[in-house]
Length: 268
Image 1 (tube, one colour):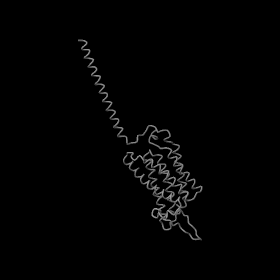
Image 2 (tube, rainbow, N blue to C red):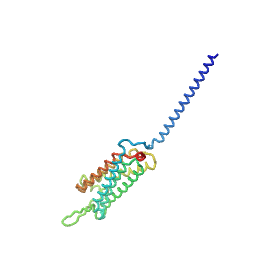
Image 3 (cartoon, rainbow, N blue to C red):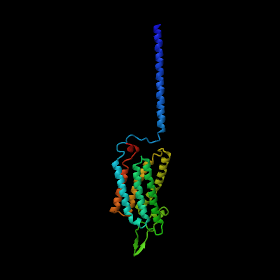
C-alpha cells in the first residue's frame, strides 16, 4: 500500500509539472505574439537609436557645410549684385538656383531631423520658384536682356533675342551643346523637385516613412543641381570668380552627403 500511494503521488507530481510546463509554453507564445504584433505596428516608423553609427553624424562637417553654404550664397550675391541692383531678371535666376542647391544639400544632411529638413526644403522650393521666374522674365520680357550683356554691332546695341526654351525648343537646338544640356537638365530637375516635394509632403502628413526612394532621389537632385550650377557658371564665362563658386557649391554638396543627422544625435 505505501508503494501504491507513493506511485500515485509521483503521477500527481508529474501531471502538475506538465501543466506548469504547458502554462509556461503558452505564456511564452503569447509574449512572442505580442512582441511580433508590436514590431509589426512599428515597422513603418523610424525608431530613434540610442547612439548614431560611427561615421553617421559629424558636428565638424555639419558646421563646415553650413559655413561653406553661407560663403557660397554670399559669393553668388556678390557676382549677381550688379544685375540685382539694376533689376535684371537673370540675376534672380542665378542667385535663386545657387540658393536652392545649398538648401537642398543642407536639408539632405539633416534628413533625420524632420522639422529642420522640411524648413530647409521649403526654402529651397521658394528659391527654385524665384530662380525660374528670373529666367522666364529674362526670356519673355520686352527687351529680353539677360545678365546685362549687350552685343555691340557698329555702335548699335543689339539685345539677346532667344526665347524661352520651353515654348521655342527649336531655337534651343541651334545653341551650343553645353547650353542645351544646361536647359534640359534644368527642366528635368524642376520636374524631379515637384515629385520630391509631393512625396515629402506625403511622408509628413501620413507620419509614416513611405516612399523609401525619397532620400535617394533627394541626393541625386542635389548632385545634379550642383552639376547644373557648374554648367551654367561655365556658360557665363570660365574665370576665377565663377570657378570659386563652383568649388564652393561642390564642397557643400560633398560635405552634406558625407553625413546624415538623426534625432538620437541631439538626444545624446
